[in-house]
Amino acid sequence: MNNLTIINARKLAEYILNDSTLLLVSPNRCPYKDHVGALFTDIILQAGVNYNTVVAPRVNYVLRKYPNAFSVIEFCSIIESDGVKNVLKWKHPTKLKRMHDLLMFCMEHRINYSKDLQAYLKKTQNQNSFLQINGVGNKTLDYLLKLLGMETVAVDRHIFSYVEKSGIECKDYHTVKMIVEYAADILDIPRRTIDYSIWTYMSEKPMNKQLVL
Image (cartoon, rainbow, N blue to C red):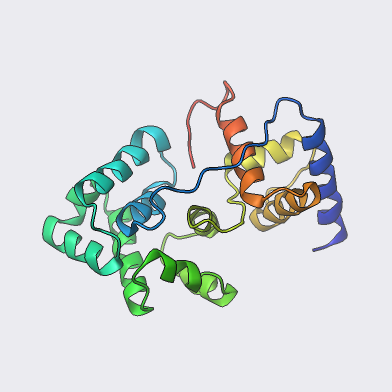
């Protein structure tokens, strides 16, 4: 971490301390982190769409319809039986293909349960391999890590906007991620907390009607 990043992290931490409108709230544990079907539905569909109206209903549908989809093998069997379009309630081929690639990646790396995936992603080299899945980027990876309960920040437009609001000009994903994570460390709060608090605050502002993850 270079000096400018450290300076900006301290600047952001000070800004947060003085921002009376930002409430620091700890996120709840993801209720379906151990349900592979719901977890994978969430991470594959979440990019670029309205979460509340598009993603959440489909995640809940998979939870209700396929309560036993706790493993990659079981979820693959369900998709083979019912068809991925019907399982996800989705037609566009890009994300359907992405789901297929994610499942094949897990099969190839002997990842069957969420706990297997969590253990696998604790290693940086494995995270780099995961990022080779077509369409999976840094934000999706960090979002998945958050759902799995790991301490990280998934930089989206809300995080970028708040960092800019604090007077820091930076558009690089990894740099902003380091700034926000180090600011959390300075404030002695969990990184997931600072992520969730900023995201909630910015997504509820009148100018941000669309809840996009």
